[in-house]
Image 1 (cartoon, rainbow, N blue to C red):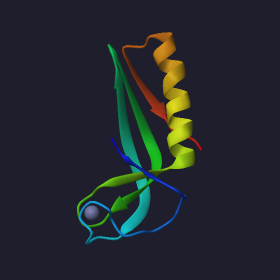
Image 2 (spheres, rainbow, N blue to C red):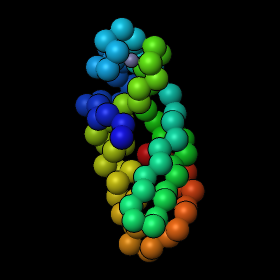
Image 3 (cartoon, rainbow, N blue to C red):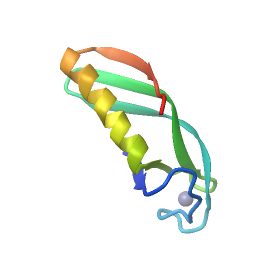
Length: 85
Ligand SMILES: [Zn+2]
């Protein structure tokens, strides 16, 4: 699971490798619950340039989980979702 981040576009030192700096970008996040798999494309995130660890902001994380909840309730098998903030 991706790490949480306080602010969007906030460059920080990576908490995992403690070497790299994070850079803003977009990632793909996969969430699974029971039989359902959700794939979110184009999620704004900070990614460590060194080890590739991904960090999501509190806001993004919240929106992501909300969208996921909708899909999980609908009981989808596999859904591809485009993230829009
Ligand atoms: Zn790192």
